[in-house]
Image (tube, rainbow, N blue to C red):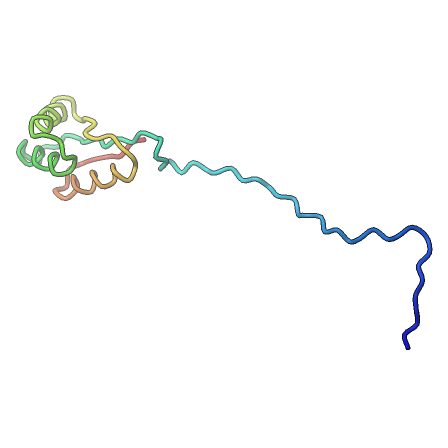
Length: 109
């Protein structure tokens, strides 16, 4: 037979586990947020013809031939032009197509 234990005084508090402190982490902006505008900039070079640039702009951006011609002239006359605006992912895809023929580009955000 087991001996009986008696406790005198105030009843013991039940063991209540205190939840660990939770630290809230803020999301870091990696710059690829969909709310941020991103741009593909095309730079002038002395290698490609107007026809090559126009064709690649139409292929990359889906713009009309007239719009591509206007962009090509802006690049030629000003040294560079923003040729596309969208999400980072979209700009990355457009840049990839432009680079197929080694056009000089940059994504800016």
